[in-house]
Image 1 (cartoon, chains in turn yellow, brown):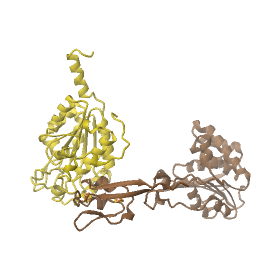
Image 2 (image 1 turned 90 degrees about the horizontal axis):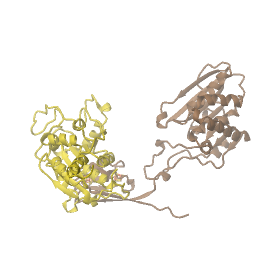
Image 3 (image 1 turned 180 degrees about the horizontal axis):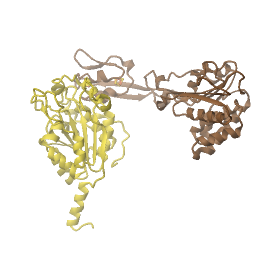
Image 4 (image 1 turned 90 degrees about the vertical axis):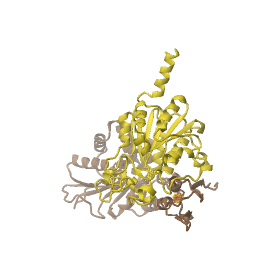
Length: 280
Length: 296
Ligand code: SF4
Ligand code: SF4
């Protein structure tokens, strides 16, 4: 663990830009809960806000960086990991946290994600998976569950879905985990471990899009969606049920992979020192 | 207690999961078998992992037909937990039975009905002294503390075996030999001592209550400080998503006619913070201030 654990009680208002509130997210959007969990984890690790950099791309998730009262960086679609890579290499003293969405990181930014995992540079990527491109009008995303309706799949989605955590694990990320927003304290702990991990950490948060996705697919409003996501965490209990909740073939939650591959920033700096004739 | 002329000797051993009820009954059954008795043992331990009730009937004699003890016919009731002792007390023979119980309390989750922070659990209120007035013979002893003083809480069941040994006619050496074969090698010495302590404690007479035994169970008040909860809702930030209303375990929030969350049952709120944590719009703030107990 890089920083001491902070004993003071967490107050979200210390970490958000109050002049930007209320935020623009729809009623019941799980992204707000994920943001709270992230800031709570930052608070528990005792990270100084001046040493925190939040980078995000485009989409509903992309707006979250603007609400964090820290160094924040709103970048182009799919590229937050690329920007963050440069930032983390240039400023190893910063805690770089990337907030991205399923479309942002798996579709348009898919290659950046794979290579960020491969390099294992010290940063944390929180991917908010709401199974839809919400901000642009509800197009199908790589994680949209089969047979669900979106504006671009009016007859139901026929494509198979991406398992982002399996992808990140296979590509070599140092820390991989997944959690639902309903388990907010578990999510906070997972994010805390992810931020403390020295290497590339990838956390998928199963979030809910009530307005654009839930409504179209008759998944209920946000409390129902959150509860069914939580129920979906227990695949052994819900597999093969007719009344399938949020996600058929529910995915495992918690920390899914952790390894101690060399951290890229350290390797890189060692090389620089070597070329400049410093160090061994 | 000698074998009754007209039937087997019945020993009922009760407790909760993890205390060693089964170990106690195995020791006893083996001991009886070594002495040439016919032994039948029957147990239920399904809920053991969750701290649920465990019981074991041990019957021995020259011939034993049924493996279970009828109500009111147990010659000895050995209870490793206080509430379990009371739960099974009707199985004890009122005229001839001996009651041996640890005064330790293990409060089951279902006894925690009042959901306020720091609320007392609904655990049986009878004190060991009250119960002992109504039994013919027996011991209410703080076996767990005795075992703890010896250095291993888990030896509490052996302390009770020591007390039980006074009620059955087997030699101390026979008991110790069987116990030695059942406990892990590392804890043999502690168990030998525990047995001796239990036996000695119960030799004082047919009835003995540990006057100081208050039960070791924790009450809610020890675990959670009582707090005063203040719930503030930033109305301008609330979007009426209903999450806090549906997720509050006490159902004490509701949406008002403007579709803004409001606290309509302030007394029911326990300050659990669920609403604060799950509000995606950061509109709820809970402040729990511990209530200071007045100095005595
Ligand atoms: S969870 Fe928050 S935004 Fe939703 S109704 Fe409750 S207070 Fe309002
Ligand atoms: S703190 Fe919130 S969720 Fe908990 S009981 Fe009170 S109103 Fe309900």
